[in-house]
Image 1: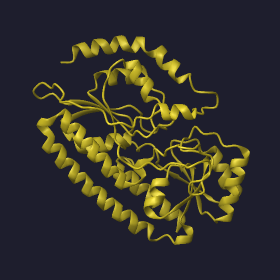
Image 2: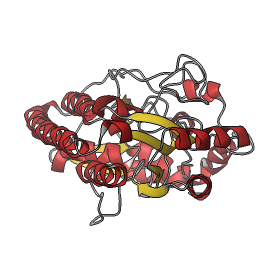
Image 3: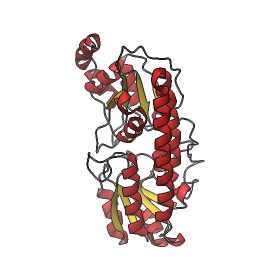
Image 4: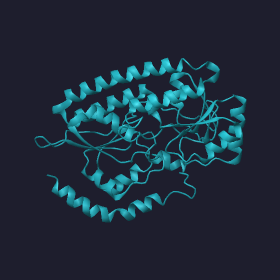
Length: 338
């Protein structure tokens, strides 16, 4: 039983609400996050891990930040772990604000799996509020992150700051293979008794990722070279574009985050690019307010197509696993571009 943990959780719910409000209040008006904060809260190092103390039959207590990370963790951990997801389904990970209940979940956890690469700007304040040195495993550890050399100097996409990294590593299944390696090693270290099971689960899931990768290539072969141009709500598809030979022409929100604020000049330039390159569609994430994208699509006479970007769908929905998520998005992209 986890009596002590539950008592501490009850106290924390009352104690940390003010701390969480203070952390969220640090953001400037308009929702923009300072560039320094993006780097400051990036979780890029792999923590030192040691075997957890588990009673007979007790499962590892695991927290994952996003539903996408959680799905991959679940495929590796299976029934050997108790898994809690911080960001609810349908929520934008860029704008997520944790609750006192999230702090309580972290207090009881033996490990937290995060995307890393600067995605979870809420995580460091959350860990500080929890007051516990729970290890955080960034599943994107070891992936070569795409970065801008300077404003507008990467693949024709403007509006970014020098050194800003793209955290949307999951849009390349090859990167998710790296995720499974990192998850399997962490779980095997924390629970060495079940290491062989974690390794077998990871290997089986990596085989499914290979099948997915081949299927995506087959689907995109239906799209001609001149039509392989993407405009999205924010710059989320760079890894996808690089792996499968597409070009991301621009984005409504000029940055890797939906918290970026486009100027009138940014939107005008984007609309000019859409016309110049005869872009077929504007793709918008289902967790994002589509207002600006609708305006751009209407001004340019392009289609507005909705995709899953930062969250899976509800259970039983069309994107309720990472594999289904990618198949849904790729199918929608191919239909819009071919």
